[in-house]
Length: 153
Ligand code: IDP
Ligand code: MG
Image (cartoon, rainbow, N blue to C red; front, side, top):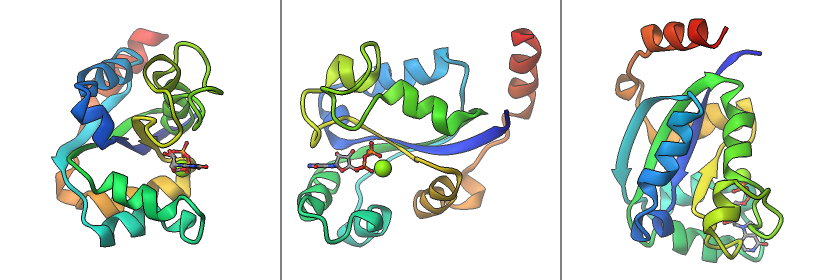
């Protein structure tokens, strides 16, 4: 177990459907801590950088169009094994394959409009967080983290 940071995005479909609060709620009740958060609209350059691993795939252009189509909410989430834990909260990429009770299974119908992004590895998290946040935008939740870990024991 290790304390990790991960990038979570409430994508434009989540913002327009009014699901930001529900997504944030699920992250917070799990015990993860928000250490940075902002609403923003991506330009094409930043979107292509974020999704660079998918460049060349048939859905890439549509994905960039969609992620730049409206405001999103970007968060840095911190907690024990937060990268895998947030992926579990999100559910599989295709909502039809997502575990019941996950965000994508409960609120999404299609792979293209699946509401949330979450980094898939430590390397992705580091790379993606640097695309969305400057170091001065992270707050310290050290005391909350200690309290939460003690209460969990
Ligand atoms: P992830 O969001 O679960 O990490 P990735 O494979 O990294 O899934 O794909 C990034 C995003 O691209 C997905 O969340 C989804 O919105 C979109 N996407 C992935 N595969 C497809 C596809 O086959 N068709 C359309 N959109 C896709
Ligand atoms: Mg991914």
